[in-house]
Image (cartoon, rainbow, N blue to C red):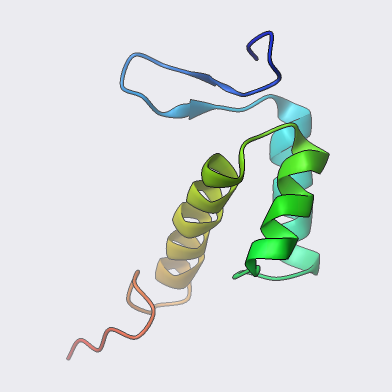
Length: 81
């Protein structure tokens, strides 16, 4: 974690989250919403000590992972035969 509280990024630019941040994000994903609105994203970001943009990115990636695990297309609204 950087001194400003934002998560560090690795050489590829990917987020490196602390265990507690990941736990909080996953709890919100499971219990609250897979697609939080902007106000909820702001609250989660503050709770996790992350930017709203990084929080939104995490939810977008996690939602795609969940959709694939359910046998659905990674992107919502896409239809594939």
